[in-house]
Each structure stands twice: as structure tokens, then as C-alpha cells.
Image (cartoon, rainbow, N blue to C red; front, side, top):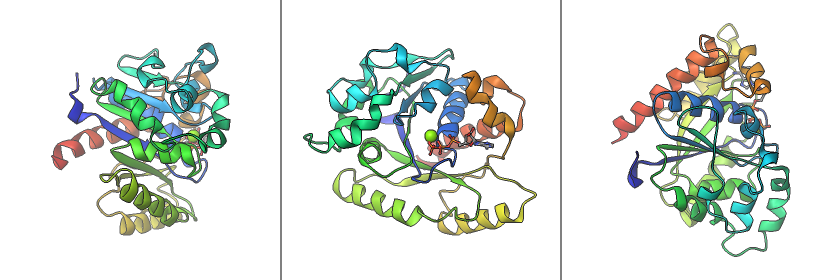
Length: 262
Ligand SMILES: Nc1ncnc2c1ncn2[C@@H]1O[C@H](COP(=O)(O)OP(=O)(O)OP(=O)(O)O)[C@@H](O)[C@H]1O
Ligand SMILES: [Mg+2]
């Protein structure tokens, strides 16, 4: 079991929609769990895609991430096992959609998640918080609680648009709430090696994030899009697919990065 100092807490964030945040959260989490790492996925998106994508029906539970953010329920009380070894989920339910509004008048509204996570300190090696596609209070809570930010970047024309705004929010949170926060990891998603645009975008992202950009790129493949409707991570749905191999490689890269960084 991990000790308190080694729990890596990632906010998986990009305010742009549909870039692969949830797919990366589920697939990377599952690949790390398969590697013997204890992993918690925290579903911060009212759509609940990370929850259902892991084969868990959020509607079955009385309490969810909503109660963690608004009702002082400790994270440990809502953690559920998935069907996969070492892999756990803090489920989201639809009522999370109202949280941005409801949080505005709450004391310490930016630090709710951080406080709640203290209840699982040391229980996991990795925590991945799947953020919604916005930079509202839910994402700020994730940034305040995180030790690192992982940004999935879809390799398409406007890929870098919005990253400046994202960086600005990260800087604000770093100055005011979480001094150690940084974008540590950038992952290219939906990469098409036959497409010169993908290659150009990759070069551009590398210029901006030379040390943060992962060597592993996630290819565009229909198997990755199919897996969630079966409630299975790609590593279980089709372990020999290109997508599963890519996320396994990413998992190894992220595990060794820890060793490299100290
Ligand atoms: N590498 C990939 N190849 C093909 N399809 C993919 C890939 N990654 C994700 N998808 C599909 O693209 C869509 C968006 O992916 P995903 O839900 O992971 O993005 P997201 O950033 O979480 O979206 P949102 O902002 O809505 O939360 C989904 O239908 C998903 O199945
Ligand atoms: Mg998502």
C-alpha cells in the first residue's frame, strides 16, 4: 500500500469538450490498476461518463461526489469498487450539474474536494479526477486538491486554443490555493499518423510543453469509442487493440516519470 507521500493526485482537465479526458481517465486508470497500482477515479462530470464507463451505475448509490462537494461527506464514504482489481470509483450523479451554482455561497468553496480527499490519504497510489469541460468551481476544486494536472490534447486544428486560458487558471490556483500545482503531463489524443495536421499539432504542442509532453500518443481508433458502452475499459474490452497498447505504454511512462522525478 502507498504511503501518504506517494499518492499522486491528477486533475484530468481541458475546458474543451470531447478531447479525451474521460477516455484517458478510465483507460490510464485501468492500465495502472492492472499493473498493481491502487487507483481511484473521481468522477467530477455530471454526465457521469467515467462512472458508467467503468461499469458502475451511479444511480444505485445514495451518496456521490455531489455530497462530497456540498455536504461534507468524506471521500472514503462514497468510494465504490469496480469490477476490476485495484480500481475504485467515486461516482457522479446528475445532481452534480447544480453544484457550480450551489457552491458559490459555501464557505471554503474551492477547498471542499481537497478536504474530502484527506480521508483516503495513503489508500491509493493514483487518484484521477475526471473534470467537466469548463473552468468553473468543480475544476477549481480539482486543481486545489491535485498534485499534478494531466491535459489531454486532441490533435486537431484548434488544439492549442484555450491552453493559455487553462494555464492562467492554473497559475491563479497555484498562487492562491495550491503552491505546488503544475501541468505535469500532456497527452496527445486521437492521433492520426497519416495526417500531416496531427504531426504539425504534435510539434506545436511539443514546443509549448517540451518536458510535459508524453512520448506515448493515443491513436484515433474506433475500439476506444466503443468500449464505454460496454462498461469496460479498453484494456479489458480489447486488450490487444492499438488503444489498449497505447494506454498501457502511457501507464508505464507515467509510473517511470515518478522515479525520474524523484
Ligand atoms: N483515441 C480515441 N479514438 C477514437 N475515439 C475516441 C478516442 N478518445 C476518445 N474518443 C471518443 O471521443 C469522444 C470524446 O471522448 P471523451 O468523452 O473521453 O472526451 P472528454 O474530454 O471527456 O469529453 P467531455 O468534455 O464531454 O467530458 C467519446 O465518444 C470517446 O469515445
Ligand atoms: Mg468527459
